[in-house]
Image (cartoon, rainbow, N blue to C red; front, side, top):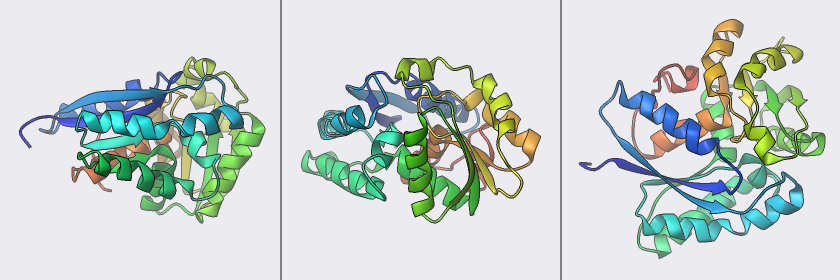
Length: 250
């Protein structure tokens, strides 16, 4: 491909992190590998992370897929993990197939990655059978996320709900705080740590730091989404300083 790869993202209207962390990872990749990327987004309304607002927002994702396929993006990412997981077990497969269908109908077929499916796929790629999870959500939504992951055959040994309902407040969290938060979890027999099970809660600056501290793979929903996007594009999944999953070994 002579032109840059076009990265499309379906983003909740209040999400500001996915358009920060995904480009940051791919710009870091550009420093060591030849491929280049541009970034394009379409937004769906959501301000508070409640089951009702998430369901209403998800219904808007088809419009976003059409808008992004108008731009002939090469891959499309659905940038809200909990919106997918709150729709029921395994819903990421249904969402990905439906949104891919919209791009196909529009004459610009593009593979679709959901952050929910990417997290599951990333943990599976690492061979993780048991994990610990940090999420910014209220406890009921965090429990829903845990159930979704466990339904995919991955045990969640421990989880931490930070209980932040406002989505902009989630984005305002200091990723350095995760270096303290993870120490509240039982890591005794896990295979991997999910430092942020939310693409709105910033975590990228702490991924490699925590991985180096615990000696186990550390991922986030954004790291897993980047991994899956690169795989769908047929590119090497290598980003410096973003943990094992993006080390190039997977």
